[in-house]
Image 1 (spheres, helix red, strand yellow):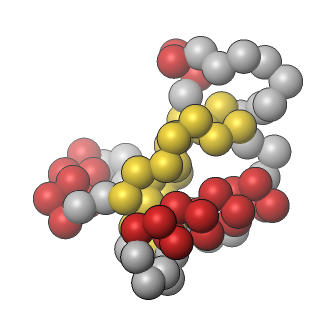
Image 2 (spheres, one colour):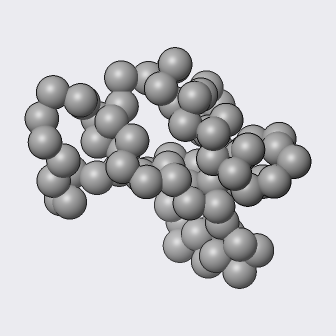
Image 3 (spheres, rainbow, N blue to C red):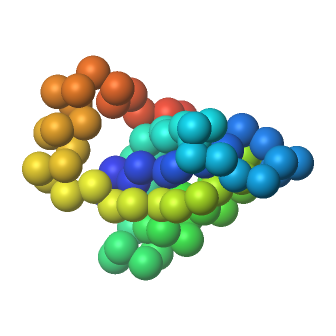
Length: 76
């Protein structure tokens, strides 16, 4: 499963929409909830990021992200 994680680069400041970034993670999970938990844990352990939202990408959404040119899997 591929998840899109929206985050702020630091936990020190309050979130601002203009400074939101996204990364894409591939997570092995039995279901969507387990994937969300694993993705959050991975990002929290490996980065100083402040996670705003985690979204499971559907096949159509994944294709759109790939076509937009912004898609690149992140390895943590």
